[in-house]
Length: 181
Image: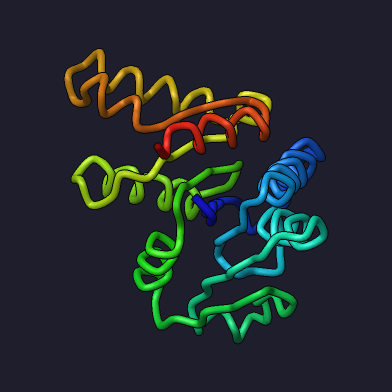
């Protein structure tokens, strides 16, 4: 395992705990010898995690659709920046380049990326580990919904176990890398 893909917000959120969690995740990735794949932006939590990986000696690969370039949100100091034509190409390339996936707090885009990569695992399109950094119970309701999907018969326990969860960046990274074997 070499590359960890992080899905997270293009905004900072309303509390400093989210920035601190993004920094902790970035530091954990780099100091444990891993590199980052992410959405390529120079804003929000995306910028924080990328900058932290770079500051701690890791490589960062960004993947950004060309239409975002007009907003001037592309990070200019990455190890490598892939410019693609669509969001679909972005997610496909991020998946191809990555050995594992971690979701930090974010909005619709983060949720959509998490849902799609988990669905791909459910369909057998990949067998890479998926984790959620549950910062201050940010994802508590979503995780409870996943449990309800099992209770209501829409999801098996085995499929529910595709998503790992921890409240601490180092702990989540350990879970994700342990489950890649």
